[in-house]
Image 1 (tube, one colour):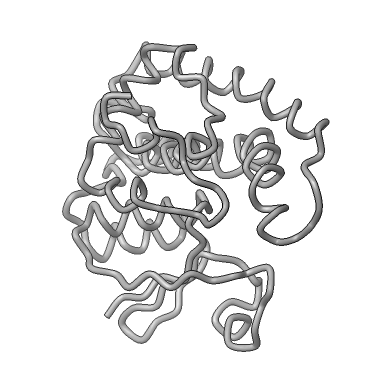
Image 2 (cartoon, one colour):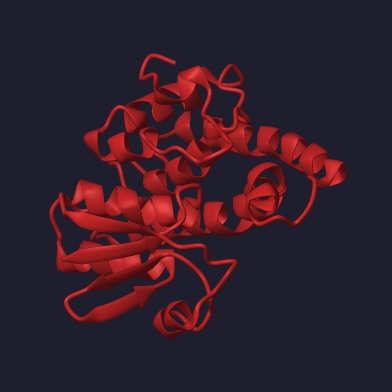
Length: 221
């Protein structure tokens, strides 16, 4: 049995969930309130973060490391290219979203609007929300520029880079913070990802107190 300790609106957890689903691996999802760490949780990951994946008597942490481990262990379908230059580009795009996009946008919108309330840390900081709302435009434009040159974010085939970006955007779409009218190219790319069977469990997520908008699970959004 594969078990994933996760939080539904964590883009890092969603990235691993998408990878598992693409590999058609059955997984037991265990929701973890990582902001209230228990001794058992800290034993699983002393860093106090999710996702944490337990499989084959191993305990794995860090989303990028987990996803690459899964891709090497279960190579079909491949989510990392064999060519070194293409593999570099996948990792670069993954890092862009997990680091830059997360710092500029996800942490400023999702965490302010949802995580603070869930964790009982007070009200959203309007300056952070305003900053994130402005920066997402830059990132969507950057994606549009990339996708005007390629079929997928890292090249001509779908890779982990696409699932990493989709994991972040799906969290923001859950709270209606993505302007899909800004770029038809980006919207078409997301529609292709969103229509994949691996995305179904994400579209079924429900966070108490935060119902998703009607378009969230609509494949013809």
